Length: 361
Image (cartoon, rainbow, N blue to C red; front, side, top):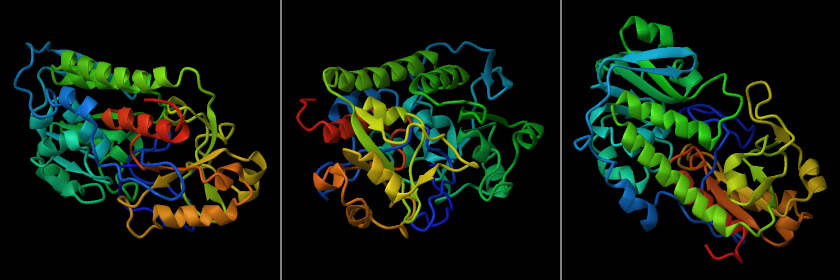
């Protein structure tokens, strides 16, 4: 799940905890044999446009209040824009900065990957309430928020370990509203659903126009890669999240991979099994014979986990008979970057470049 926080060692047993479960997950890095690239960076084509909204809320049109917004089965009513927001994880923080609402963010947490370059200056002004995890109840209240924003509903109102933070009802009793980008009852989180949530978040801050501009920027960026992929065939790809023995993977289509010109080898698996992403055996992977392997990089999230190169070395032996290994077709993705926003624009393009090296992007 991805916004950081304590997690079990998935080299022994694949596990996800914190703020961004595998519905859109992944991040770019590189292709080819064993070389990799880190992904804290930015792309010039998506940086300049974002800079007009990433920092402050000083150039907004007259806000339309009061406003009611539906979120995860509740109606949130706002007579004015929130003045003090705590963002519970990096995904939510980058969404808020993308809308230009950074001035209202009085605390962030759960940085599990280097902040996107476009947002770094604004991010550096925000107090970090918890490194690699969720703020405690006391620390959260110390920021005096009138709104809490998170990526995943469950962890936003639970913390980790589950139950270590306020429930949504407990926050409401303290006159603190809550908004999450992904709801527990969402059957599938798609880019289109995230676009709707970005616009809702913009309405909450009286920044609907900025939110719509942000959505257009993301849509246009992803569409540009899609145009380059028009005449290509999706590449059968094993999406590897970690682990030995049982190998962690992701079920369903995985929209980020699809947008990158890939086809999930285990799309027939459910998104979650007992609340966890599915696992498969090496024999199952060999039988399906992927043309490429997408390796998830969780090094920034948990430095104790194996490096990307160690994972590639292991897979090279465990899946030696597959076309992916024979042709050294390894791509690498960070834990976060298919989670939405400008990261996803860059991630889709970079993974596409890895899967389709002969295409001009």
